[in-house]
Image 1 (cartoon, rainbow, N blue to C red):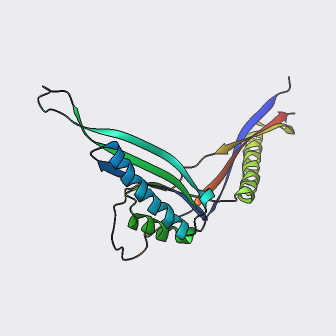
Image 2: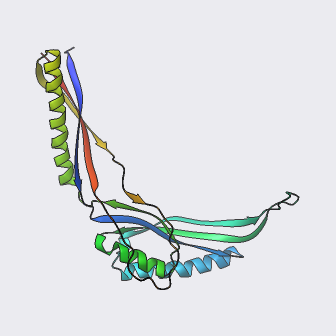
Image 3: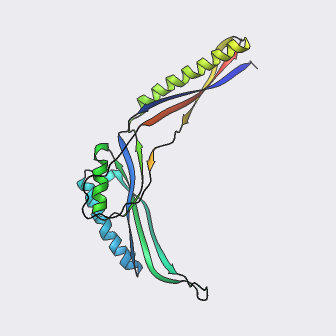
Length: 210
């Protein structure tokens, strides 16, 4: 077996995101499941209409969660079993906003139309292949730099490359978590700070030791 030296290289490129994915929805409460569902359906229809009016295409809206849960009242003395006093219905959709400069207005509109749940906003880059290729070059250069440094420090000579493997590095994504409440008249669009996204690649390269 040939003697090998194997090293990891890391490369990353930063760029501004050009899209966002947000979870919006409606939770309603009523004495019966039927009433809660009827109210929720009516509110969600307004939310869908608002998204459509904001230019969001149907293919960019997907139901992500739907729940009907009973609400219980508990006896403080535990003398009686819990009894159902109503029902909660929650319907949430995942929305891809392709025009990032409209995100604040989209959030403002859905809240104004009845959405009382906004569970998170995640920013992304729609087409990041060129950025990944640049990160790959930087990762290879990083691995080569380390290999030359180790070769000099240990007085060995590098031979041909024996293997190259790639792994995607997943950096933390900027995410906003919050909960919206209905506003009858919002003074302006929701302020949004998109920051930067990190596109990163890890490579592992093995060289033969001469």
